[in-house]
Length: 240
Image 1 (cartoon, rainbow, N blue to C red):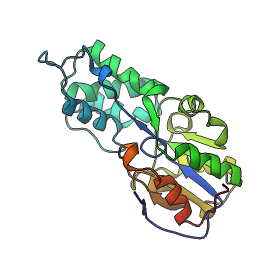
Image 2 (image 1 turned 90 degrees about the vertical axis):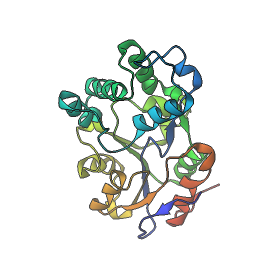
Image 3 (image 1 turned 90 degrees about the horizontal axis):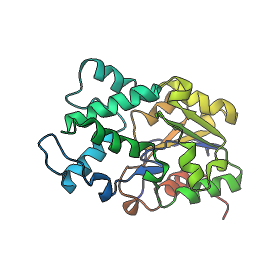
Image 4 (image 1 turned 180 degrees about the horizontal axis):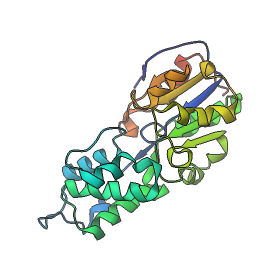
Protein backbone atom coordinates (compact mmCIF):
# COMPACT_ATOMS: atom_id res chain seq x y z
CA UNK A 1 0.00 0.00 0.00
CA UNK A 2 1.47 3.33 -1.03
CA UNK A 3 1.49 5.92 1.79
CA UNK A 4 -0.25 9.26 1.53
CA UNK A 5 2.52 11.80 1.06
CA UNK A 6 1.38 15.02 2.65
CA UNK A 7 4.14 17.26 1.43
CA UNK A 8 7.54 17.14 -0.18
CA UNK A 9 10.52 19.41 0.02
CA UNK A 10 14.20 18.91 -0.88
CA UNK A 11 15.69 15.47 -0.37
CA UNK A 12 15.83 14.86 3.39
CA UNK A 13 19.14 14.20 5.13
CA UNK A 14 17.57 12.57 8.19
CA UNK A 15 14.36 10.70 8.97
CA UNK A 16 12.21 10.68 12.09
CA UNK A 17 9.70 7.90 12.69
CA UNK A 18 6.72 7.48 14.96
CA UNK A 19 6.66 4.15 16.81
CA UNK A 20 3.15 2.74 17.32
CA UNK A 21 1.27 2.26 14.06
CA UNK A 22 4.32 3.28 12.05
CA UNK A 23 7.31 1.07 12.87
CA UNK A 24 5.55 -1.42 15.13
CA UNK A 25 1.99 -2.51 15.79
CA UNK A 26 0.39 -3.72 19.01
CA UNK A 27 -0.99 -7.06 17.85
CA UNK A 28 -3.32 -9.00 20.14
CA UNK A 29 -3.22 -12.76 20.47
CA UNK A 30 -6.25 -14.92 21.29
CA UNK A 31 -4.65 -16.30 24.44
CA UNK A 32 -4.55 -12.79 25.98
CA UNK A 33 -8.30 -12.93 26.54
CA UNK A 34 -8.49 -16.47 27.89
CA UNK A 35 -10.21 -16.34 31.29
CA UNK A 36 -10.89 -12.59 30.95
CA UNK A 37 -14.56 -11.77 31.47
CA UNK A 38 -16.60 -8.62 31.09
CA UNK A 39 -18.74 -7.08 33.81
CA UNK A 40 -21.63 -9.37 32.88
CA UNK A 41 -19.44 -12.45 33.25
CA UNK A 42 -19.24 -13.01 29.49
CA UNK A 43 -16.12 -13.87 27.49
CA UNK A 44 -14.83 -11.30 25.02
CA UNK A 45 -15.68 -12.45 21.50
CA UNK A 46 -13.15 -11.70 18.73
CA UNK A 47 -15.01 -8.61 17.54
CA UNK A 48 -14.89 -7.07 21.02
CA UNK A 49 -11.26 -8.04 21.41
CA UNK A 50 -10.38 -6.22 18.20
CA UNK A 51 -12.35 -3.15 19.27
CA UNK A 52 -10.56 -3.02 22.63
CA UNK A 53 -7.13 -3.22 21.02
CA UNK A 54 -8.13 -0.53 18.50
CA UNK A 55 -9.14 1.77 21.33
CA UNK A 56 -5.93 1.09 23.21
CA UNK A 57 -3.68 2.13 20.33
CA UNK A 58 -5.68 5.11 18.97
CA UNK A 59 -3.07 7.89 18.63
CA UNK A 60 -5.30 10.83 19.61
CA UNK A 61 -8.69 11.60 21.11
CA UNK A 62 -10.60 11.13 24.36
CA UNK A 63 -12.50 7.84 24.60
CA UNK A 64 -16.18 8.20 25.41
CA UNK A 65 -17.00 7.59 29.04
CA UNK A 66 -13.73 8.74 30.62
CA UNK A 67 -14.40 11.60 33.03
CA UNK A 68 -13.03 13.45 36.06
CA UNK A 69 -9.63 12.36 37.38
CA UNK A 70 -9.60 9.51 34.88
CA UNK A 71 -9.85 12.03 32.08
CA UNK A 72 -6.86 13.94 33.45
CA UNK A 73 -4.90 10.69 33.67
CA UNK A 74 -5.84 9.78 30.10
CA UNK A 75 -4.87 13.17 28.70
CA UNK A 76 -1.51 13.05 30.52
CA UNK A 77 -0.89 9.32 30.17
CA UNK A 78 2.10 9.64 27.87
CA UNK A 79 3.92 11.88 30.35
CA UNK A 80 3.95 9.52 33.30
CA UNK A 81 3.97 5.70 33.59
CA UNK A 82 1.63 5.71 36.60
CA UNK A 83 -0.90 7.93 34.84
CA UNK A 84 -0.56 5.71 31.77
CA UNK A 85 -1.77 2.70 33.73
CA UNK A 86 -4.57 4.69 35.42
CA UNK A 87 -5.74 6.04 32.08
CA UNK A 88 -5.78 2.66 30.38
CA UNK A 89 -7.57 0.96 33.26
CA UNK A 90 -10.20 3.70 32.95
CA UNK A 91 -10.46 2.98 29.23
CA UNK A 92 -10.94 -0.73 29.90
CA UNK A 93 -13.73 0.02 32.36
CA UNK A 94 -15.60 1.83 29.57
CA UNK A 95 -15.59 -1.37 27.49
CA UNK A 96 -16.89 -3.55 30.31
CA UNK A 97 -13.69 -4.71 32.02
CA UNK A 98 -13.96 -3.34 35.55
CA UNK A 99 -12.26 -6.31 37.19
CA UNK A 100 -8.90 -4.81 38.17
CA UNK A 101 -7.05 -8.11 37.92
CA UNK A 102 -8.33 -8.77 34.41
CA UNK A 103 -7.70 -5.17 33.29
CA UNK A 104 -4.16 -5.13 34.65
CA UNK A 105 -3.44 -8.45 32.97
CA UNK A 106 -4.40 -7.01 29.59
CA UNK A 107 -2.69 -3.67 30.23
CA UNK A 108 0.58 -5.41 31.07
CA UNK A 109 0.61 -6.74 27.52
CA UNK A 110 1.22 -3.16 26.33
CA UNK A 111 4.48 -3.11 28.28
CA UNK A 112 5.68 -6.47 26.97
CA UNK A 113 8.14 -5.99 24.07
CA UNK A 114 6.93 -9.24 22.52
CA UNK A 115 3.46 -7.75 22.05
CA UNK A 116 4.78 -5.32 19.45
CA UNK A 117 5.07 -6.64 15.90
CA UNK A 118 7.27 -4.87 13.33
CA UNK A 119 5.76 -3.93 9.99
CA UNK A 120 7.17 -5.93 7.11
CA UNK A 121 9.69 -3.28 6.07
CA UNK A 122 10.60 -1.84 9.48
CA UNK A 123 13.89 -3.67 9.90
CA UNK A 124 14.80 -3.13 6.26
CA UNK A 125 14.13 0.61 6.16
CA UNK A 126 16.05 1.27 9.38
CA UNK A 127 18.95 -0.93 8.31
CA UNK A 128 19.22 0.59 4.85
CA UNK A 129 18.93 4.16 6.13
CA UNK A 130 21.72 3.48 8.63
CA UNK A 131 23.88 1.80 5.97
CA UNK A 132 23.34 4.82 3.71
CA UNK A 133 24.43 7.15 6.49
CA UNK A 134 21.06 8.81 7.03
CA UNK A 135 20.50 9.64 10.72
CA UNK A 136 17.37 8.13 12.30
CA UNK A 137 15.22 9.38 15.16
CA UNK A 138 12.14 7.98 16.84
CA UNK A 139 9.55 10.43 18.22
CA UNK A 140 6.80 8.81 20.24
CA UNK A 141 3.98 9.64 22.62
CA UNK A 142 4.66 6.78 24.99
CA UNK A 143 5.13 6.05 28.68
CA UNK A 144 7.47 3.06 28.55
CA UNK A 145 10.92 2.40 27.13
CA UNK A 146 10.36 1.33 23.54
CA UNK A 147 14.10 0.75 23.13
CA UNK A 148 13.41 -2.70 24.57
CA UNK A 149 11.14 -3.47 21.62
CA UNK A 150 13.78 -2.50 19.09
CA UNK A 151 16.45 -4.38 21.06
CA UNK A 152 14.32 -7.53 20.88
CA UNK A 153 14.62 -7.30 17.09
CA UNK A 154 18.30 -6.31 17.13
CA UNK A 155 17.79 -2.84 15.66
CA UNK A 156 18.00 -0.47 18.63
CA UNK A 157 21.58 0.45 17.70
CA UNK A 158 20.42 1.81 14.33
CA UNK A 159 18.56 4.72 15.93
CA UNK A 160 20.55 7.89 16.59
CA UNK A 161 18.02 9.71 18.78
CA UNK A 162 14.99 8.77 20.85
CA UNK A 163 12.46 11.46 21.84
CA UNK A 164 9.94 9.75 24.12
CA UNK A 165 7.20 11.88 25.65
CA UNK A 166 7.57 10.58 29.19
CA UNK A 167 11.30 11.32 29.14
CA UNK A 168 11.07 14.72 27.46
CA UNK A 169 7.94 15.96 29.23
CA UNK A 170 6.13 16.93 26.03
CA UNK A 171 3.52 15.30 23.80
CA UNK A 172 3.15 15.44 20.02
CA UNK A 173 2.26 17.68 18.28
CA UNK A 174 4.24 19.93 20.65
CA UNK A 175 7.35 21.11 18.76
CA UNK A 176 9.53 20.46 21.83
CA UNK A 177 9.22 16.71 21.42
CA UNK A 178 10.35 16.79 17.80
CA UNK A 179 13.14 19.18 18.73
CA UNK A 180 14.37 16.65 21.28
CA UNK A 181 15.10 14.28 18.40
CA UNK A 182 16.38 16.89 15.96
CA UNK A 183 18.98 18.43 18.26
CA UNK A 184 21.06 15.25 18.83
CA UNK A 185 20.93 14.42 15.13
CA UNK A 186 22.18 17.89 14.20
CA UNK A 187 20.27 18.16 10.91
CA UNK A 188 18.13 21.29 10.28
CA UNK A 189 14.39 20.62 10.42
CA UNK A 190 14.00 21.69 6.79
CA UNK A 191 16.18 18.73 5.80
CA UNK A 192 14.28 16.15 7.83
CA UNK A 193 11.40 13.83 6.94
CA UNK A 194 8.90 12.77 9.62
CA UNK A 195 7.00 9.53 8.98
CA UNK A 196 3.94 8.69 11.04
CA UNK A 197 0.35 7.44 11.10
CA UNK A 198 -1.31 10.58 12.50
CA UNK A 199 -1.59 13.86 10.63
CA UNK A 200 -2.53 15.61 13.86
CA UNK A 201 0.22 14.23 16.09
CA UNK A 202 3.09 13.32 13.76
CA UNK A 203 2.25 16.07 11.29
CA UNK A 204 3.15 18.52 14.03
CA UNK A 205 6.74 18.22 12.82
CA UNK A 206 5.80 20.49 9.93
CA UNK A 207 5.60 23.41 12.36
CA UNK A 208 9.38 23.16 12.66
CA UNK A 209 9.85 22.89 8.89
CA UNK A 210 10.09 19.12 8.49
CA UNK A 211 8.44 17.38 5.57
CA UNK A 212 5.90 14.72 6.47
CA UNK A 213 4.72 11.37 5.10
CA UNK A 214 1.60 9.61 6.32
CA UNK A 215 1.39 5.84 6.60
CA UNK A 216 -1.64 3.91 7.79
CA UNK A 217 -1.96 1.79 10.92
CA UNK A 218 -3.30 -1.39 9.34
CA UNK A 219 -2.38 -5.07 9.77
CA UNK A 220 1.26 -5.55 8.71
CA UNK A 221 0.25 -7.86 5.86
CA UNK A 222 -1.72 -4.98 4.32
CA UNK A 223 1.23 -2.59 4.42
CA UNK A 224 4.35 -4.40 3.18
CA UNK A 225 6.38 -1.49 1.79
CA UNK A 226 4.84 1.77 3.07
CA UNK A 227 7.94 2.89 4.97
CA UNK A 228 10.26 2.19 2.06
CA UNK A 229 7.80 3.90 -0.29
CA UNK A 230 7.64 7.00 1.90
CA UNK A 231 11.40 7.32 2.03
CA UNK A 232 11.79 6.72 -1.70
CA UNK A 233 9.01 9.18 -2.60
CA UNK A 234 10.96 11.92 -0.83
CA UNK A 235 14.04 11.22 -2.91
CA UNK A 236 16.17 9.28 -0.42
CA UNK A 237 18.21 6.68 -2.25
CA UNK A 238 18.93 3.72 0.00
CA UNK A 239 22.00 1.56 -0.25
CA UNK A 240 21.22 -2.08 -0.99
